[in-house]
Length: 415
Ligand SMILES: *Cc1c(COP(=O)(O)O)cnc(C)c1O
Image 1 (tube, rainbow, N blue to C red):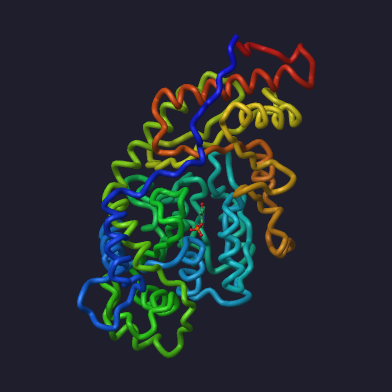
Image 2: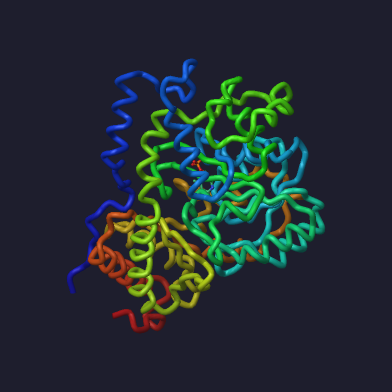
């Protein structure tokens, strides 16, 4: 039988909409790339983006910054995290997340995850009590959303301030409420492989006036903060303007110009992502032992990538490595969280050796789950036919992997 190969490039990003390109060219022509002007003849793009994103999120304040990782760092600092503080964080997350905690001088305390790849509520409750941490950084890694009503309840019971890392959930929500509105602040990314793409960029939303003023000052507003449009009243800045360092992490006007039209079409694009995910999920449902996470009805997910776990009954460790290779050789670049060495974007908590291991806490479920966890991007341009081809490549790679290693007696229904 002829082999199936996917000829698209799963790493190819989506283009910036024409309206964004035109706005960027206008800015380039007049040179006003810095987000603040000293005169106020026109409204800067970054201030407009903040106003529009605050409105989208239904929050009072928004601060645009240079990356998602910096948004998290600034939100932690602005929420009062100090050097030596402990910050709880789910163990399945991306390297910039423990990086942001470390940047703030604080120590991550890892919380275990469950088979939905989200924070384990019992472990959160236990570690909140044991660690005495005052903060929880809730990271919606790869867009998976836990029962946020329960998370909010646990944090409230322990007097913990929650900051949300929504790098992969812009427009996603739980039980009808957007991520980024459950905690004291929500942090977003505009890195190329997230919901909106400006290469680099970050956004913080909050309803807390002191956190907002401090985040604006920390981001590097100088004394030009009056030019923000989604900011607290000027008197709030009086409380903080002499005691808050300028960390120079502003968003440039150019980045904001690229993002504004993408924000305007966010919901429509998330629906397309959802259709891509559902099409692929239906195709992959036919492979026994290739397990997709349960998606409760309350989870309004906005998937920019797809994860699945490979059961040891389907493929042993050697066969799993073979599966990854075979899929790659046929055009589907699957990332694996179980690799000994971190590759590309995919690293694991035990690779972050700057974390104080004794304080970090054991996460046995994360270790078990990540050793079997596969991941691939879902570019928005995937057609239904593309989804079927990708699923066929994965099925073919399972069959190829099962034919090596443990002998033919392991081969079942691989046709
Ligand atoms: C991408 C990402 C970040 C960091 O965003 P950057 O803009 O790349 O700094 C943080 N958390 C998660 C879960 C991410 O996927």
